[in-house]
Image (cartoon, rainbow, N blue to C red):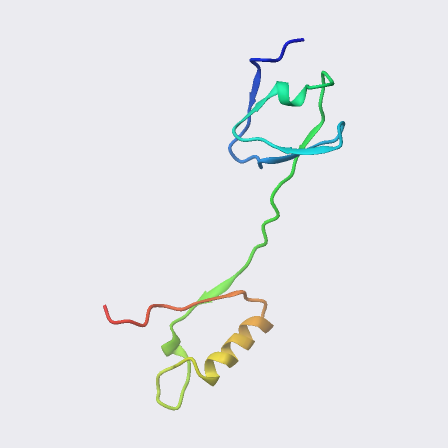
Length: 103
């Protein structure tokens, strides 16, 4: 059969990488998958599109002035280190610091 002008239009959310189990090979595709690429030597295929592993993460948004210090306003001193240790111990990944410059 001639598959020269036949393509499969892939969904937008599908990953680019796939594994061809019948040929024991990996390959990539963009928005379209030409069947000439898939049906080179066999008229059928068993493809598995590998889903990206996305690790979820959480954190806090807090201005550095919210930390305690001897001057009454927070800084990146010992209290910031203690706060980072607390975040790590509680499973948090991010501390987003609000801007410190004047508007």
